[in-house]
Length: 501
Image 1 (cartoon, rainbow, N blue to C red):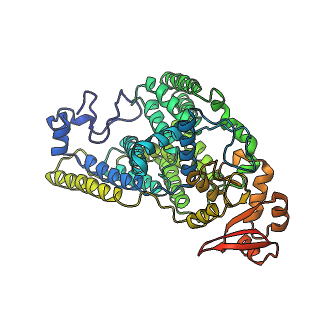
Image 2: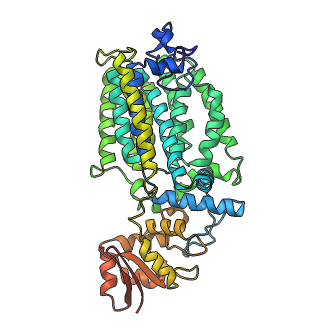
Image 3: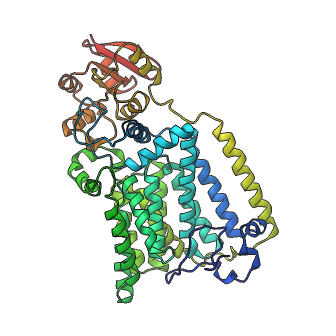
């Protein structure tokens, strides 16, 4: 137990006082068992045992083999920065937007990825992802403390981890997720607000979701005022430090334009409407369904058990943001976690502060399993790149179809893979998932190519490619096979390569 009365088995985050929620371990301040880490491990609480179990699952998620297509481009960009000593200001990757202005908004994450890869390879990157996921789990567990009892915290934690199985990937938004969770802790008087300066600086330079930081503090402050009709002095203080950290985030190799990047993206609304993660959530995706369950449960609990403006404003704002754009589900789930915990307060009679002897045996078993299985996992293939056209692209390179002078049409995810596997000097891409980068006409071409009823002949004629790399079992792939203007020169079980007949 530290001086602030917090059971550090749950998390190392410092608590500086909280008028909105209290630590369930506060009443245990006199217990000598909690005075050292060794004592906590020797006689852990039930809360600590559940946390370690959830942390074990989170780390297993983080150690999954690297596969995400966006991550591949972030890593490739980091390599360019390390090799050249500067951050690119124009697009180096494509033949459709080559030389166009480009703001590398996640340059900090790209640099971190490239440095870790150079030092420890892809296993190092997996450990980095597992570390970030672990930190996020610690922060989320702190946000469940308002539930008080073990049952409420367990239910909230299970929902969060269920979402994490589909969202906690190696992409830079993990930095933003941690930043958002820490911002909420600061707003709840459980983290010194001055920490928001370095937190926001890192957030600004690693992911474009940083406007959510000051936004959630603003909503909590307005809610405080509406509930108590008094000036929200603490929220104003947090907002000030958050704003200062955001402004200082402009001190970087890119400069202040990194701060206006999220606003500039709004000008590309037409391009984003074609991107799945920018569209409204559906009932077909597993992550979407889990989030909708979490949203409905949280809304009902807040309405009937924790109805305050301080809860309802963030719930409504972030709930709508996630429903209208699935890209915001991760951020919304973090904001909903403490609200869900408040609604679950008092559920069940199991006291999470209890320290039964069986808890120590179980925790030690989990810790050993975590270490052993992590080491086993790190001995497996660190990447899972089977979905990408590895054999096809090697064949194209050996036959002179991939060089910078070639114009190859391929899917956006294949573009990310080409950037990672060959770099801008060995291959130029048609498009990748940076839709804000490309002229709108290129985005429309791509949308037409993936459309079942697309005008393939017109699009290919306007784009004038030197080769096409596409999956054969698709409408456009079947069109290529049947076309008398294109000749298939390579084909495997999934991909085909075609050149003008």
